[in-house]
Length: 484
Ligand SMILES: NC(=O)c1ccc[n+]([C@@H]2O[C@H](COP(=O)([O-])OP(=O)(O)OC[C@H]3O[C@@H](n4cnc5c(N)ncnc54)[C@H](O)[C@@H]3O)[C@@H](O)[C@H]2O)c1
Image (cartoon, rainbow, N blue to C red; front, side, top):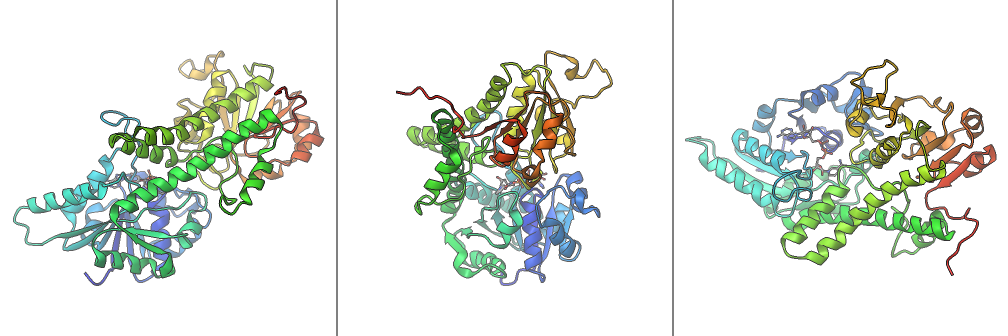
């Protein structure tokens, strides 16, 4: 194959949608067809009202306006898109298996396998198949086997099909996806078929300098993606574990982060403490690595990485405990305002958000939560909390009517502080940095508390307003430390 014209991406999710949108904007001569089995998702991608796109990312709306229905198309027509494609990106979900062999650790590859089968059936001629999804090491081998075996089955088909499988993991971070895609630190292409690798590279070269494009063997590429996420998550767990030490010793995590970040060997990025890492990838990818290590009998390696997840779970749990303790050991029927439900700012994604665990724990303690988030849909919160939103109408079938248990409601306005005993900041949305705490204080029940798990509130303003303040990792207000 010498000429690439049509590109298909299977999976119109948080990766497939934004990635193809940026590629389409950078390669106006190529056609990008993003397909998905989920009809609602495709409808949302095609919605004229751009506030209804299924993914919120700064800058995405503008790119979609420029490219959609010009050289970027969203549809459920998988067969057509695969048939005409020269390159097919597989960008489907790869969650952790919930049952069977490897449950709780290894990736469930059923969606990837389904894609491989669709590609084998519908593709024509030479096709480059690219793993965009994050996959366990040696998945490319599985995909290649499926493609070859089904191809040889294609009964009397006169068309000869050839497949080259490449690994091209995506390193974007939600919240900065467009920036990351437009100016990535590197693009990784793993494979054995050099000409296919060069063809894929040529697409990226439309906007990415050649020296940023790395070629590796296919297994290194797959492993590099898992390792990259494991290192990032480990860094979050490391700083969060130190924040707990700061709180009991009188140190301050922001000062510690600043001091260690100046060491060029450590670097200053990813050193903000928070309520624990979330997102669909970190936990899943580490557990994948743990499974891989266990599979090959590397028990110590497995234990080392598993601890990064364990301490994150512990850290999420400890936040709710602190809130209960500070509010005199009981939060039953106390109103608590939750600021932010997304796993980080600038995304509407709540997958594995620390807010889920923390809100569940607070509700279990009997709190009445009012959850605010500028981008998250309350229907998603209902799914995450496995609990319907409280409605005034008495309805026996609604769990919230049980008063031993708490409840939650949602608001996307910030006029929700009346009679609140506490405000808990869980996502670092910009809106929360400018809250007028003096006005808020007047409305809150006393003693009023602000719990800031992101260290973003204006400490002076909160303190001057008379509200009690707890900041994650700040032990500086400790009166007495009995250590020696
Ligand atoms: N979300 C991130 O920040 C991120 C970053 C880098 C890599 N990744 C990896 O990228 C992959 C995709 O992640 P995501 O967040 O976009 O997932 P997602 O769940 O948002 O999207 C996946 C989409 O694939 C569709 N799909 C599944 N099987 C299909 C099939 N056979 N045919 C057509 N469509 C199908 C689903 O309906 C869904 O819309 C995962 O492997 C993930 O680990 C994610």
